[in-house]
Length: 137
Image (cartoon, rainbow, N blue to C red; front, top):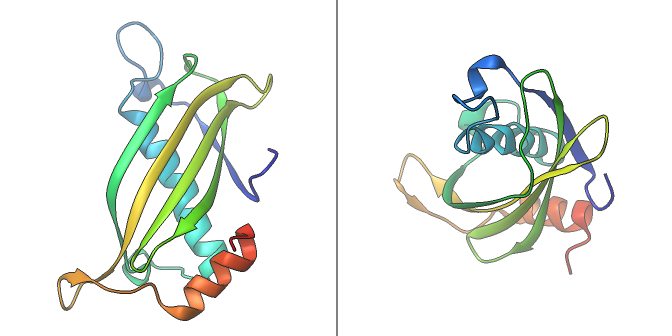
């Protein structure tokens, strides 16, 4: 998937579909979460969710074509930009076999200290890893 170095496959389950037989719109947030967790594990070297140190502040999804049970979707994830405590991520969801564009998504994550219950600056080591990995200037 061009422009995305972190890509994962997600198999559409019957439970993901609605009465019309296509993937319910809310389920796409789960699919992009799978890619986001993979990104944080691979790029930042974090294994446990409690060690990610981020919270989801915003999500938007643009639906391009329906997905159906028994399809496999490829979800790409990357960091587009970094702020002081926030990061903007983008996602591309394609049907694996045909490459059909299914959805585009964006999220804003905020670095967060759970013990202090407040946002914090993105740690310098994490910033450097994401900048290097995704070519952010």
